[in-house]
Length: 422
Image 1 (spheres, rainbow, N blue to C red):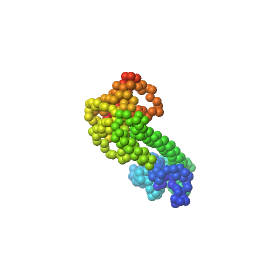
Image 2 (tube, one colour):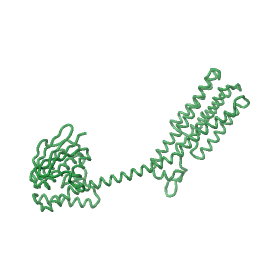
Image 3 (cartoon, rainbow, N blue to C red):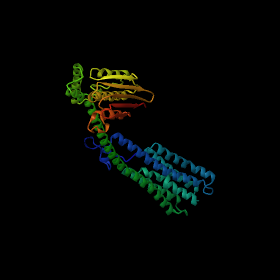
Image 4 (cartoon, rainbow, N blue to C red):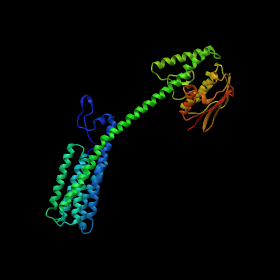
């Protein structure tokens, strides 16, 4: 049983796909994708052929059991090959195989012969109609799968001519309308073959369209990945090397020399790794790891943040919960955003003290950062500034968190970080 429009045997030069009517479309899809499409197309053709065959077989069976067409015993005998024919069609739709075509055609011929022997020349409208339906659809349904290659078209033509010949031979010399029966057979085979040919011709068009959609998706995905990588690198550099440069620009005021030296060394290692093409993941402002850990200890992350901020010119009063319970990737983003908020206080608020209140419940983890500094207007943050928009707002937005800012010039600043628990 053909499974789809098939390619010719062998392969093209240098292992390329062979030339076919849809070779260009195939070339854009992987071998696995081609096999999947071929299988689905083959199943669709087989189901279509079985549908045509079952319609003709079942209607013929019903006609034969109409009183007056055949006697009860004759109808029972005639039903046996028809039931087997219906079973062959069903099996061919479930598991398409070449030998099942032969089984369907053979059982169709047996059904015609059985009815012909039972009638013994005493034809009536019902029996001749049943014969026509068996020949037109019960056997002719296989035409839907015999339109894929020239070899199958030739086999289908031979089966069609044998069916016509057998039908005429059995009904020769009877008052039945032979021309009408032949027209019915031609129509049944023609409809099945046309439908199968249309499905086969649609296969390359579907492959081409899927190929175009796949290419568009890949272009969009690569663009998204590039943008995400650009933002990630910008955040990384802002939270590390640029933070160090800011300290140097202010002559390291408020930061002891050893802390500044350690941060500059780690930033130098980071820049070297980036130049070599590696993608280290930052753990906090001024700190990062070159390998991704599977799990970040909850207490250690906030404790590490506290220790890193010591000696950097900002006294921090911690209130509330000592830790928050979040998944490792959410916790990392939460701590990084909190670290950047405190860095902003140290750089811009013109104060030496800030307050951090942590809370953790069943629904969310929160951090409230408060200072009594000079304040600012959140709406006046330039679009090109990465510090707050990317390192705080966008970072929490990536994990479904929210950031609220309450500030005004001369009135201090309060930032609320919240990460909802899934």
